[in-house]
Length: 376
Ligand SMILES: Cc1ncc(COP(=O)(O)O)c(C=O)c1O
Image 1 (tube, helix red, strand yellow):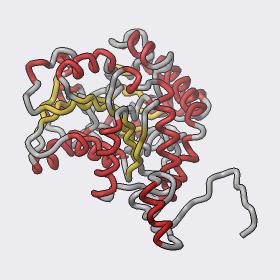
Image 2 (spheres, protein in one colour):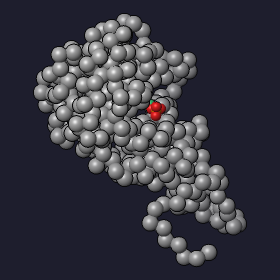
Image 3 (cartoon, protein in one colour):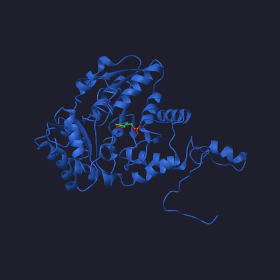
Image 4 (cartoon, protein in one colour):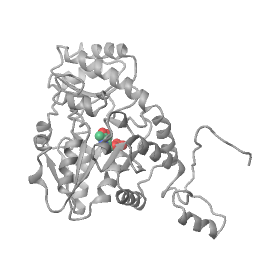
């Protein structure tokens, strides 16, 4: 074999690694992390991605998983067993709520939702078997910003772990571990990979005991990420900082445009000075406010359809955080599984549209939004 020194990491598209003899096998067990045996346990591409995200988040170690959902599952199963109890912010991604309500409840892990008004005063909801609190740095889709430092003070007092889904903020804006969170998870599918071509997740830990458990759950349940998807995500991650700056710049310009539009009844974006947590968002977000925003037009499904049909450039795609802008409809997609009462309470009504702002030229996006709104 010639001496090869590639600049880019090759893809180790293999399910298993070979050993010369028993001595090499023993070295594998003696030097964890130095050698590889089986890709479900570890693979150089997955390790590269995990190490890069870990560095960005300032953790002691990270584990990548097959999706954001499996990252949340891994974090919860690493800490909880049957008979335990989880506290979860009421404003949470619908898939996380479905995991807790429909699946983890079946294996004896119970959940209580913490209403947003009780976020920092949830003492009465803590039970002797409560193990963790799950929340998002910025909630989906209405961009409520959680004060992680304040939340961490409370969870520490009660001796429970704080698990933060940092998908919307990314480590460019916020490092939850530095604010006191115990575990950070991401849907890598979103900003971290950034090009709408990967489904992946990551769990970043602050304590060695949590990392050991997270690794064990990932490999025992088989929640690993494939070498190719790890490679694609690691490739996307290289431009995260640059992309986030343009996402944030465009989102602020669009939020200001929508706020002054007569067809728009409400805009949710932490960068607007009238957002209830604008100051907190500024401080916790490193001066940035993210690339996601939501707005409400008339609460009429036909008006929403006309808006969507009027857009020429921006597609309706029920995901987020890609380089090109897309819209989504929380009531019909991410929050569909919630009860009518939950949807109403959170404020997700018929006219609410979520915008994932991409990195195009700002003017292009404003022109297309005007085309859509003119049809409402
Ligand atoms: C905030 C948040 N967390 C987790 C997930 C789940 O991630 P995935 O779709 O990669 O499983 C999503 C998906 O939209 C999300 O928006």
